[in-house]
Length: 421
Image (cartoon, rainbow, N blue to C red; front, side, top):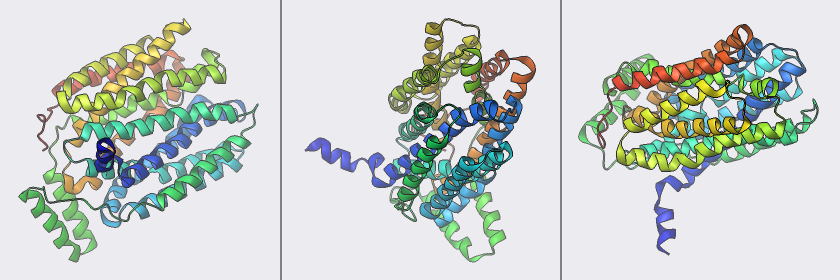
């Protein structure tokens, strides 16, 4: 049948892409369950940790993740996907085991840091591989698919794990997470060493750069690294405002990470089931809208979706802690979900448009390092804001950061549709 032939020919559903997306989904499922549900509640009720300590614990994960992101991108370009990803998932597996058998929050911090080291290859591998397959025509669409896998994992992890957590008993929950990581290791073994990409359509300039990259293999290691980074810098065209904007975008998310569960449990007094519904209300809306929005960004351009997305998300966060009606809270959560469905494909399409095809691994690793700093600083600042100024402060801070981004992105030049610099 015609539709089956089109399905097989669609590069977005190739075995390589599907393997990457499965790994993305399951690893983020485990991370979401740990960081958003298990650790904040367990460390508060059982270990007596403050919000500031919890913030530092979660920041340890992002520090470990961020330290390796740029070198991981370089390693992908040299060693390929299987070795890079398999090493990462094995470290992640070990981190889950450490947290499962530990009873002191010091070891939880160690486990979170190791979790960060293990998940560092995840985003560079997935984004590099999927955008490499998608080509220039479908950047926003493929980024929507990637983020759909990410959000599905992050959203379902905290929801599902609630059904396996007893009264101060996390044994079965950790067994489930260890089982999930076993599946990830098996899938990572199926990855190819290198994804073969058809370069017949590349331009003369790209061929010359690829040739130069091949020639420097015979030089010393230090010379190769220096030349490689110089080529990346010369071939990358991006507004200087993009770098603080990338930090701010993840900083706004990082502020919410350690206090979302605390707000639901301690202020709203939600049960585990009610909290799960809360997460579904926002996450499901985002996932449903992501792919359609990605296709619309590819067709209509980036700017309108950034304007709408930042406006909706900022408004929802600024109003969130001042609304007491559960019905209105669900509406605001859904509004936040819609806002991020606008932001995610358009923002990442903008970033992807500045990346040269022949240096995707290293440049994505560099960009993700900048974004990672936002996820490191955000939880630390959030915990301090919560302890000193109360529960309103983190949500208001996140909302104001998005307003800043709304203004800042107006001064960032966006490549014309169909033009990749």
